[in-house]
Amino acid sequence: MSSYILKIEGKRLDTFIMILVRLSISFKEIKRTKDYLIIEVLEEDYNKLLKINTTYNIEIIKRKGLAYFIHFLKFRKLFIIVTILGFLFFNLLTNLVFNVRVVETDNDLRELILSDLKELGIKKYGFKVNYKEKEKIEEKILNKERDLLEWIEIEEKGVNYEVKLIKRVKDNIEKETEPRNIIASKNGLVTRIEAEKGEVVTKKNAYVNKGDILISGLIKNNENIVSKTRAIGKVYAEVWYKVSLSLPTNYHEEKKTGKNKIVLEISFLSDDIAITDFDKYKHSKDTKTVLYKHPLLPISINLTKKEEVKTVDIDFSENYDKNIRPLAIEKLKTKLGNNIHILGEKVLKREENADRIDIDIFFKVEEDITSYSSLKDFDIEKENQKIEEETN
Image 1: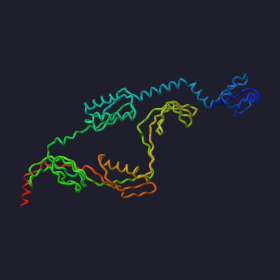
Image 2 (image 1 turned 90 degrees about the vertical axis):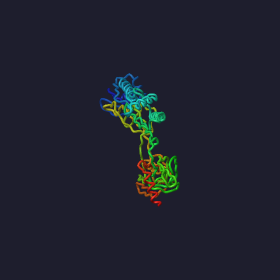
Image 3 (image 1 turned 30 degrees about the horizontal axis):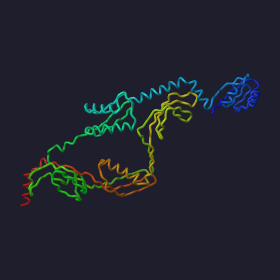
Image 4 (image 1 turned 180 degrees about the vertical axis):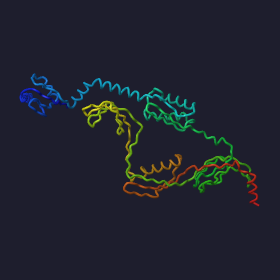
């Protein structure tokens, strides 16, 4: 609804008020002096006043509601057009890629990755891709170059892309011929033995200590050692770990999803009116850049960078399996790596107070305990002589 605040000047102001009443024009008297009258009328009533031929001077001193915005747009048309064009140009520039840099010293690999990126749509002077598309591109390159890459990350830095990667290191151990034993890297209860070469000197369900020989590289005939070989295989064991966590009873976190956009907004009083935001984020972190601010009125035009965030509220005092167990497993994987198999678990201690929960969890984990000890300097003749002396 639109309304006008009018200043009426002229003689016999009471006569003017009678005219308003006779024409059924609703008004609100704001101020009255001997020389002028200030009233507020609705837009349709103001239009009636314009059709009356009177000697009174009628001046608009303020517009309210839609009339204010129409008047604002009418007299600042050029500024708004320039602002919108500027925003579109700015949006175009911020969505262009000016450089793609692969952080890698190997020139051949760097050129190969740049070529792959170009095929998938990431190239110099091309348009940026969204977060999900970027993840898909990373996955496609990893699948294509699985023999060369262990990991890749495409990071957006302003108008540039910086690509970080880890080369896959080919395991050359199996190509070597140096003889060795397979030994235990830690204490545990043997669960699986996968021997390809060498003599198995332990058995399933046997408890072994760190350094114990599991698959020997010594080849024997009766009691005598006849040769050395390279033991090949894997040994898995049940190993025990304690994970301790100290957590807040109630936890609130905002996590950025990686999505962001630039939005043109008009701010009026405490309200922000989005002009170009057609697919709004449910939650976002906003950073405003003011393009124009009215010197008197509470209105401004802004470019706002919106970064999508997801809010997480967790009550750690409830639902162990959903809230606490995943954190404990994540902490365990940080220490051991992702390639572990949890056989069992038990909560050893749980203490709660007003704002924190302290908990200790015992995990039984099956993991690869394969390690190696060299037989390069092992003297077969001396060892056989020693065995013979002990026998005699």
